[in-house]
Each structure stands twice: as C-alpha cells, then as structure tokens.
Image (cartoon, rainbow, N blue to C red; front, side, top):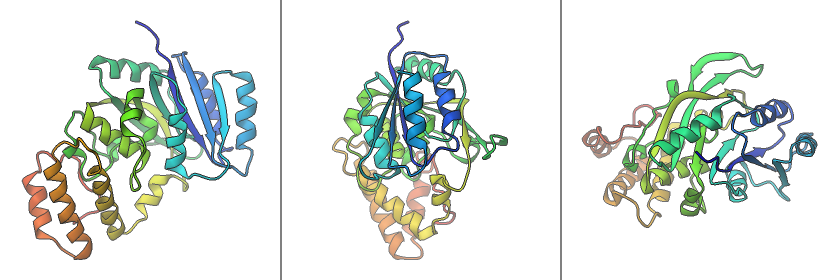
Length: 285
C-alpha cells in the first residue's frame, strides 16, 4: 500500500513548557511521510525559538508566525489551510502522541474510505502522569453519516482526528459560532461518514489553560445559547441533511434561551431519542 503524505497542523501559543516533548513524539512516529505545519500565534515566550531550532534539525517542520493573534480556532483554520498532505492531523502543543498514532489512524480511515476518523485519548496531568480516564469516558462517540446524532453536542477533539484533505475544501471557511473541530466533524458526517478508533492514540495533558476547562466554567444559559448559535451555523450548509429537523430544533432551542423551561423541546428530544445519540451536557434543559 502506498504511503500518502500526512500533514500535521500544529498551533502554538506560549507553549514552551511542553512543546519539545510533543515535537519529539511527532518526529518519532512510525509513519514517516509527514510534514509539520507549525503556526505560532504571537507567543511572548520562547515557543517560536524552540520551533525554529527544531525545524533546523528536522526539514519536515515548516514554521509560520502570525502577524497578529488569531485565537485558538482561527489559528487552526489557518494552519490547516497551509497543509498540502492527502490527509491532515491536528496537534496541540502540550500533548504527547503514541508512537503509532498516524499509522493506526490512517489504516482505520482507509477501511471504509471515510472522510474523518477520531480516536480515544488518555488524560495526563501537568507532569505527564496518567489520570486514569479517557476522553470516551466523558464524551459520547458516534460512527456513521447522520448529522442529527451530533445536533446537541460536540464530540470531536481536534487532537484525536485525521481527515481527508477534501474535507477542508467542503468545510472552509468555518462559520462564526463553531470551533474548527466541531465543524469539521459535523460537515464530515453530513457529507460522508465518520468512524471511531477506540484505541488511545494521544496523551491529553490537562491543565488550567485547556479550552475544555473554559467550556466547563460556562453557565447553563451560556451553553444553551452556544448550542443555538451552533445550530444556526449548521443551517448555513446548502446541502444539509434533515434540514427540517434542524430548523425545528433551532426554533425550540431559541425559545429555551428566552424562557426557563420549554416542554416542547423536551418532547422533541424524546421523540428523536434514538437518533440524537449524543446528549447535551448541561443537565436539565
């Protein structure tokens, strides 16, 4: 079997503390036909210096520096747009990759010619010690091609994904209210199929700067408002499957934002309970 080029979109911002460990795990992959597109988002520490020094030793690494801070999701969108590989993987600056991550993800996505595969992650603390929990312990996972299953919550973690380059051409630009990983996962499900690799491929470092930590700190109203905005983005897709379903859900969630209770929303979710397999994690809606 041929060995297509895999691009790795690595975004950095003040990541000097853990970056070398992650770079070592990427260069040490068993799959060797890679390029690393590293985009620094105006770091004020030694992150850019580390990237540039590492790139001198490893020509697979190409380093870019933004002229102004883009923020987490837009920086990844930019980094992905620079990738030239047939497949694209996402890298955070502070994780550690299992040595055969790219190899097993590529094998999985090729089985059914899927658009996107995502895998399991093991949480570690700041020192790299296991926290004995995985991303699949906390999040639902879904395999298939029905976007209604993803209507209520994002199940995709960017660092766990590998996807075909053609997905970028379908999905970009990313709309206003969506994060890059949630949007890519949803579009892949709507236009093709996503698959799951339950194997742990990433050691996912947990600390106070994680974007998931910021989400957990949001109020219930903020989360429901975010849900409404995400569904709004879904409705911008010209060939959205089950459009009537999403239009009705949007109207009901909008009413929930403006009122403390919405019985019709609860009845709607109950009616579609076998379709909406991924639940909304804010408690009672």
